[in-house]
Amino acid sequence: MMLWFVFALMTAAAIFAVLWPLGRGTRPQNDGSDTVVYKDQLAEIDRDVAAGLIAPPEADAARVEISRRLLAAADHQREPAVISNIRLRRSAAIIALVVLPVVAVAFYLPLGSPSLGDFPLAQRTHAPDVAQPLDNLVAQVELHLEKNPTDGRGWNVLAPVLARLGRYDDAIRAYHNSITYGGDSSARRADLGEAIAAAAGGVVTSEAKAEFERALALDPNEIKARYFLGLAAEQDGRTAEATSIWEAMLANAPPDAPWRPVVQAALARVGGSTAPALSDGAVAAAKDMNETDRGTMIRGMVERLASRLKQNGDDVEGWLRLVRAYMVMGDREKARGALTDARQAVANDAERLRQLNEGLKDLGLDG
Image (cartoon, rainbow, N blue to C red; front, side):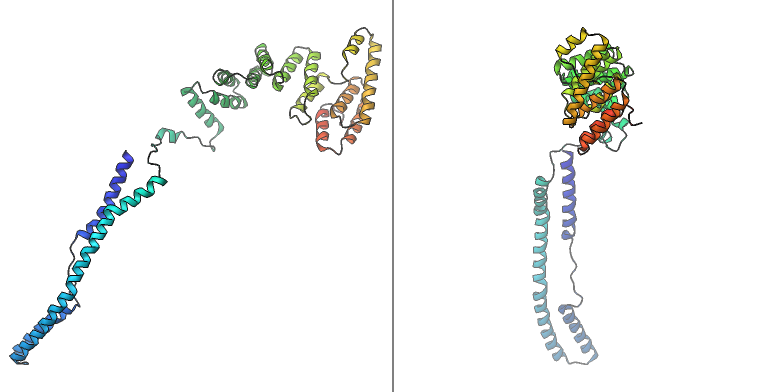
């Protein structure tokens, strides 16, 4: 309403500026007109009569002729000018009073926003600015969430930012609120477990482990939850279980999975994936073997893997398992030879070569 009042005042001021000069009278423009000339001639005749330069009869005749011309000039010049001025003033007044406001409204209604409310000054002050430091933006989001604590989407956006800033306790609370108000999901449970582990200095506590297990209950293929459960097993000294978890992840992973190098490095750390997986029958048979026979069986499987890779060298995961197997058996020369053969086999495939180098960078064979 205030906006329309301001517009009305501006319109009234514009109309007044137009009508004010139109309402003022104008002085007759006599200088240089025919009537002035004729009046001067009449005065000159009087002066000539007084000076005796012209006879009275001749003066009277001249006065009559000049007066006739004066009247004709006045009728010809003054009356049309007055009529013309009045018409112009009326036209200008109509335009100022009617046409200009109508044209202004006709333009404003389709192009303007008459129904748009005023933007509060407080919101202008706190409007987000991408150029602000991250801490300031986080503070603004936190202020918003204090006033709107059930905004699940806001908590979901804030939680990972807090985790990246190292504010793990706040991130844990944000993830809890995200799950409460935004809905449960395997990804949110896994993120919550990761934040709990980070708050504990990287230790997968029982609380964190419970969150990872809840994530797997919602989605058995949740990568982060599977990895951290393997890490929990490693931290508890159950390296065989950790190896099994991580090997299963790699077995079903696409070649370009971005997390593959992390899992491969974890396997190298615990000595897992160093030999071909045994079938159920082979595992049962190995339980009854002595150490010598078991070692002979494993070496036979490693040799069969090496033979297969010579025929099909595109299996990057197979090469990684072969190199690690030689490392576990203490045969570094064979491990180096397998590494050379592997790089030659995938030399023409940049992606496979990258995966191979990522998987082997922690083994120390290039030093």
